Amino acid sequence: MPTIRVVDKGVEVPSQGADPILFVLWDNRVTITSICGGNCSCGACNIEVLEGMENLNPVSDEEARVLSKIKRQGPNVRLACQCVPNGDVAIRIVPED
Ligand code: FES
Image 1 (cartoon, helix red, strand yellow):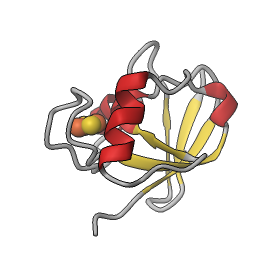
Image 2 (cartoon, rainbow, N blue to C red; image 1 turned 120 degrees about the vertical axis):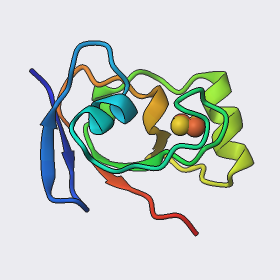
Image 3 (cartoon, rainbow, N blue to C red; image 1 turned 180 degrees about the horizontal axis):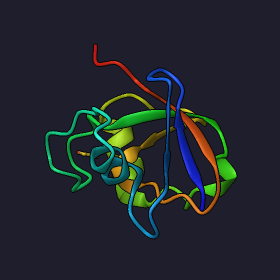
């Protein structure tokens, strides 16, 4: 079972099937901000992927649009509500400005 290591929180949680990282973290009581509830519109759930980017689904046009809107584009930045791991990943939850 893939794991999600949240480096800045010092925790590691098991990935759960097809659930996006956001919901896996919430299920494991790891705090990460969301305003839209995981509907890919607020951008508050942005994360930095430190390891395992190859284990995530590709960025969709919708996710790219939101990342562009919040000016958080970069090769390692994703939205936790849009990432489904199929292998181990290490992330950092990007603090809000
Ligand atoms: S929770 Fe709003 S964009 Fe991910």
